[in-house]
Length: 127
Length: 261
Image (tube, rainbow over all chains, first blue to last red; front, side, top):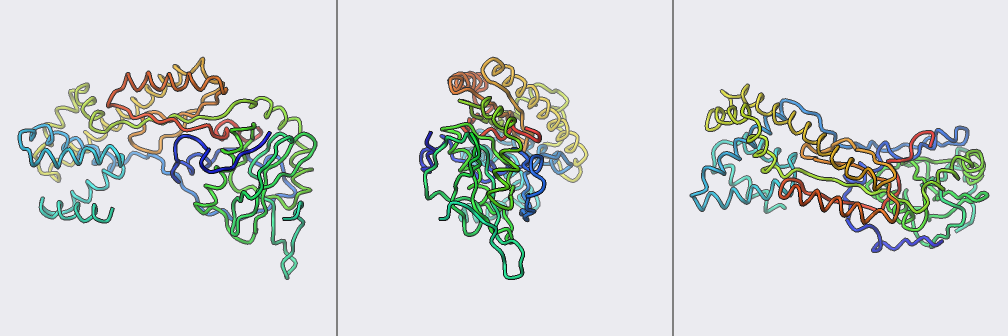
């Protein structure tokens, strides 16, 4: 048997660090259970996987997402608004609830549409 | 690079280098040279053999902490590369032994039968992870159409002062959250049940995203992978625009080796 180690020949999907963490955190064989005497205690940097804990913040984010969903359905006759709503929708799909919801909270905290649009634009420029 | 790691001492007499263990493989594995693992600087991956078993190891400086993104990536990259050719028992991240002799005697020899048996069971098999995320808009529309109470709450908060409707928003959000949890359980059951006859084992993972629909690891025979693709395609067809599904693998069987093998 030969073990190939070329980077390009691995699995079909590239993995992000979050996936890597979720894959190895608390998983795999615990060597401590097999070796006691010669185990070396080495400092392992804290590794956290996000876990979903529902809180009032979660509920408020979901509610705001529903509120926005409603707006996008009602304003379909207005081309300008529809464009920006669709853009928002696409962003939600690609970024996931947590990130999108954070954006919403930030928007929510801002005052007035003009300021929100400004903030959103600047974030996009950063991205 | 020397074939064997000896205990290298610091000036104060304490041990400086240790042997990081990535996993255990059959002893007839051959490694390409020049592949590096965890630590700074990263040590070259090599094998410590004993009888018909071998451990994938590299030297690490035990005075420095491990766990940088590069370390984590190196750990999975090595194991996931190995699994394409040979069964491997992946170690949990961070296992370091004093020297090669400890790896050979205390780890490989002392637990030989258990490791050899596990590797035999894993022959020709690998882990695949199926992850599905709800498409937020479709999910919320689905919940509102199914739940009149949620729809009524939506009507009451819409256009109203957020502060004045805070309690209603919390109620609505809680309904949605609980519904998502229930849908996740139901959809996970559906996936696991569809895969029941096409995998050696399945292990649902804990959701780490509020929009996770399914997140399940499967231990698959090489000839079952086509079935996995078929099942995932069927679910995609069944959930168009509702759940985005992704399959990752082959990878080492992280989810199927635990404490006590």
